Amino acid sequence: MAALGLLATGCGGGSDSGDGKVTIRYSWWGAKDRAELIQKTVRLFEKEHPNIKVKTDFSEYTDFWSKFNTQAAGGNAPDVFQNSYAFLRKYGDKNLLLDLNGQAGAGNLSLKGFRDGLEKAGDIDGKLLGVPVGANTFAFFYNPEAFKKAGVTVQDGWTWDDFFAAAKKVRKGDGTLYGASDNANVMYLYDLYLRQNGKAFFTKDNKLGFTKDDLTEWWGRWQSHAKADELVPGKKSEQAKPKASISADLSASEFTWDNFLVRFAAETKTTLDLGPIPTMDGKRTGQYLSSLMLSGSARTQHPRKSPSSSTS
Image (cartoon, rainbow, N blue to C red; front, side, top):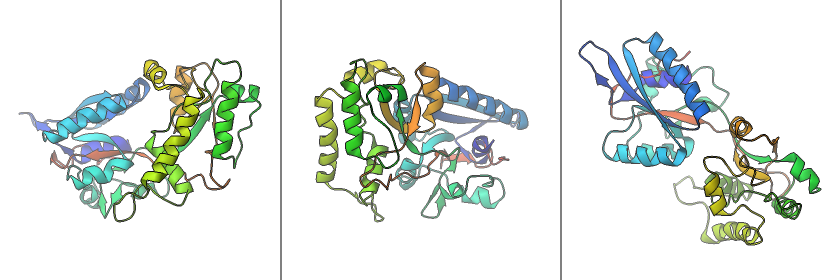
């Protein structure tokens, strides 16, 4: 109910009907299984709050942000929407997000029951711009059978050299699988790589924390293995959508958020496992605890009527 709590807490642009009922809009991205679970929580929320109607909308990740940016530009952002920690500052600086501190202070939004540290996950410069709806970290998925056949052992402390060597061995096996998906352009993975090297995506003064040479080195490394036909070609990855390359049985490994395990299990009969992130020094993975967030629109007309003020 924490997710719905945000809905009842501050949902912008909701509309009143003549009988005193309020309609609020709730948008998110994700697969069908997530949509079904969220719809169930919405129905529970509406049952507890019969004067509030929640109009829902969900999309694939890319389509979601395209639609959201168009709506926000027109002053018609959803009242409550799924957000990413990485975008809190971006949209907060544009004054698109509701500061939820007021609702929390008034007792309309409960911040209890979260995993230690997550209650502050949505805090940006003293403003509470989102509340977490779970906890996850960026992870490494792999096909243990394919790795075993290639004579590769995934273990703590393995390096990027080990990872790319493993991808090469898997590809040189029976040729049915690529060693890895091409994750060169995945921002969150590059962020881990920077952290392993003592850097960060952004500095504390909001400047880029890496150089052109840093990015060139990262992309170049992936590109060399892509040219060697060890990584899934972009065209094949596109053709596999909405499945990921690993769940479409194209690759033997992929980097993404750990909660994708449930989705992958539903998309493929192949047994997949989670392994440690490759490192630079055998120690630092750069991983951190993160969460999907729920944010409210700063244009809210009903800051208390949106599934988060009634969290329990």
